[in-house]
Amino acid sequence: MRVHVFETSDDLGRAVAARVGDELRRNPSAVLGLATGGTPLATYGELRRMHAAGLIDFSPATTFNLDEFAGIDASHSGSFRRYMDVKLFDSVNLDAHRIHFLNGVADDLDVECERYEKEIEHAGGIDLQMLGIGANGHIGFNEPDETLAARTHRVQLHDQTRRDNAAAFGGDLSRVPTEALSMGMGTILKSRAIVLMAIGARKARCVERAVNGPITTRLPASFLQLHRDVELFLDRGASSLLVRPA
Ligand code: F6R
Image 1 (cartoon, rainbow, N blue to C red):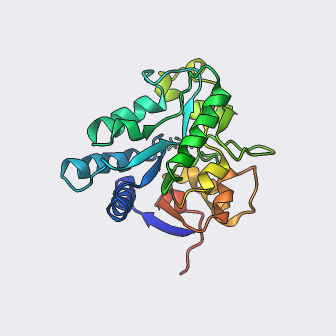
Image 2 (image 1 turned 135 degrees about the horizontal axis):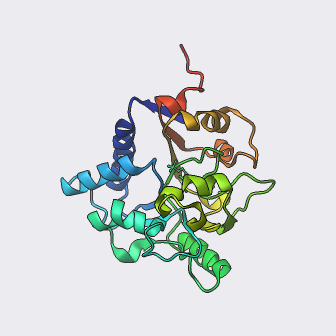
């Protein structure tokens, strides 16, 4: 894994946005895997700025988001779809037909997961997958467990993950869905390149274990060690437990 460390989250966001820009210049019809949450906010801000300045063209690109809550629809203020509309989609020239999302209110959620997996395959797989990391080491909504699912699947969210997402539900934990849909570990690992972002000392321990620890289903991010093209974009806090050469 290649590790890049930045002084501020804005610097980190600019670097990840530049990485996305490079990808789209090399391959204008790239398939991008996108994450939500607090960590990519600076990246999306920079991508909006780059687009407004004419520095990046999303029109031939395709996107697939990692995950979505079950039981709420795209218009719900806590949905990841709404987050993406506000933070990126409404401000750039992505073709609406090439934006892909899991539907958390599909009639049959298992069929919905199969549909998504097939759409990713049909698009030729993901060229560049952006990931955040949960303080418990989850990526996407692949929560630590005795086993992990390879393909897109339904997930029971851990209490910690629900607490971490409560702000988007007015701080009311009882309103945070208990279930979600997520790309699986195999779906993520099939991506041609992966960028994992982490901000803050709260993430330092799981980042260190993901990089140096054993590969274990108890820390899903540790499976990234099996991938040949992973870059870590960290701020000082998140990198603070990684031993760097003097
Ligand atoms: C979001 C996602 C999650 C987050 C992770 C970190 O689409 O898949 O794995 O990346 O929970 O969230 P933040 O960035 O809010 O700390």
